[in-house]
Image (spheres, rainbow, N blue to C red):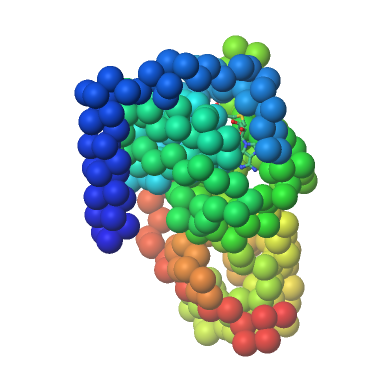
Length: 297
Ligand SMILES: C[S@@+](CC[C@H](N)C(=O)[O-])C[C@H]1O[C@@H](n2cnc3c(N)ncnc32)[C@H](O)[C@@H]1O
């Protein structure tokens, strides 16, 4: 709430000042005399704007809403933050190193009627803090994405990251977005679940068992094994989507069961759910909880 109030206050003042400049007829150098050239050099990468249709597809794939705070790293003329605010109702911040582009982008936001929702910071993407973003957009280069990746992976699980054209090294995207011959990629920051867990609620034979699960994790991909009374079985289809964990296992009756659970730091809770394709089958809710094992092996 404090962030929202501060943001609105700051941009109400900025918008009012810019409006005054417009009224005084002094904006020509901002709005008209600076025309960026496609391919002009930038600090780490040149300026080329993302095509309008792809901007909309990228923000749609990220399911941007008015609840989101979108950061565009390397904002250019502001097309992504402006669209995020105007068409999706989000608050948006653009970080742009080139001072003239940053000024132009803020003026474009004002002209588009979203000066109160869009803030353009003139700064370096490798210096500015974007950790509060719920959505990050990029149109940089593969190696710059890879450089940002450690920071991105520390963000809130479920944060969406969308990159025009360039991938993220060996972190596979969750979705590929195509638009008239252009491609973008979407990732959801995965919660960290690697290590050992002590689990309750999975046994279906009425007996109390000490049950351990161990996950190995690489980004959103998991492999896991479950040990019940010293007997080990490999978990099937283990994966993580943001802070949602999925895996399947065989119960004491040799039936395939599926677990969907929500991760909250050092614990997760969820239930045994119907297998995919059998949503009409209403199983009695079987609650499952887990905490990180003390030695986390
Ligand atoms: C390919 S353009 C993308 C512009 C915009 N995001 C879009 O998709 O339309 C990359 C932008 O990043 C800016 N840029 C390059 N290095 C930067 C850095 N280290 N910090 C901030 N901006 C940077 C460039 O000036 C350029 O405007």
